[in-house]
Every structure is written in structure tokens, then in C-alpha cells.
Amino acid sequence: MVNGSESAEPSDVQRKILVAAERLFAQRGVANVSLREIGAAAGQRNNSAVQYHFSTKQGLIVALYDFRLVELNRHRLEMLAARGEHSLADLVDAYVRPLGSAVVEAAGANAYARFIHRYLGEGAGDFEPFTPRHNSGVKAIAAELANRLDHLPEPARAERIRQFGQVVTAVLADIERRLEYRQIARGGAVAAVDGLVSGMLAFLSAP
Picture 1 (cartoon, one colour):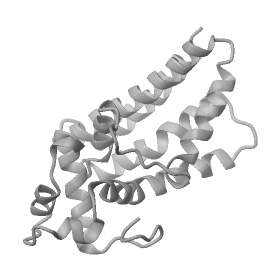
Picture 2: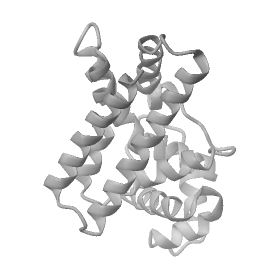
Picture 3: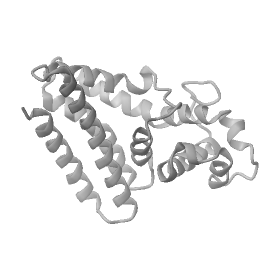
Picture 4: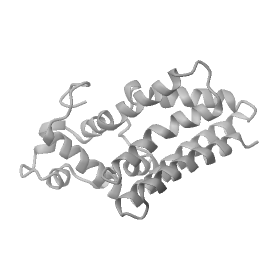
């Protein structure tokens, strides 16, 4: 959402601010970065540029979700809709592939996977404005995973699904970082995402 509109595409200035924000948030955490620092990193001379475009830090976070997560969510929902019934492999694929493909395609130019990994690791604090347009796909996958893991006691089931999500974001954040610093080539990154899918399927399939 930018300036109150869920559907509006960000302007060039807004896009620069969003890219700068996700990188600084990934490096230092949401709580440790000021709006003024974000504006400066985005090349804005006006100290109030971020407030002008996004009002508050929470408004900026929502806009960042709109900027990245809406498309990822759409991709997940399309993958789920492609099949009437979903195997465990289908669910893992639908969870991992959209962000994994985005990480590979960006080739290290973005820091979204690193941002979301750090953000979730911080516990999100007061900033957790997820809406269905951001995470309905993830919620649908998690619900189906819970049904497929019904042989586990509820606490163990919830913990396994939580660990699944944490490992996925951690590994994709690492792939993203290695792509930026040219520690891994595109082919290696594709193979790493494939390996993550296989590994997470084995993890969820374990007794």
C-alpha cells in the first residue's frame, strides 16, 4: 500500500525508498533504522521524504509487503489452484519456490529474503501488518500441512511447521547474500533452492 492505495504501483522515488529500507532493515533490524537514514540511503535530500511518502515506519513496512509479498502470495495461490488435491511435495514446492525463484532472479540485487528472515527472527515487535493479500497462500499451506502432520501431537506439529518456515527463510536469505557477493553462481543458486525443497520435504516427512 502506497499513500493509502493497495493497488497503486510505487513511483520511482517510492521504489528507491523501499529498496533502501529493505536493505537497511536486513542489515540492522527494523528497530535500529530511522526513517531519515532510509531517506538518505535512497538519495533523498529532504529529511522528511519517507514520512511524506509512507507517513510512518509501519506504513513503510506495509508498503514493503505490498511491493514484494503480494506477487509472491499470488504465485503461491496459483500453484495451489493448479491442483485440486495437494501432496506434501506440492505444499513444500508452493511454499518455497515463489520466494526461491525471486531470490534467484534478483541475483543479489534485492535484500528481501534477508529482511524477512531478520524481521521474523526479531519477533516483529509492533510491526506485523500482514493481511490476506500478503499471506493467504502461506496460511492455506500451513493449514494443509497441519492436516498432513496430524499423526504428531499438536505441540510437535506446530513446532515442526514453525521450524520449516524458519529454515526456509534462513536458507533463502543465505542464498541471496551469496548471490550478491558472487559467492555462488546462478546455476548453483538454482540447485540450492532445489536442495532446499528436497530437504524440507524430508524434514516434514520424518516421523
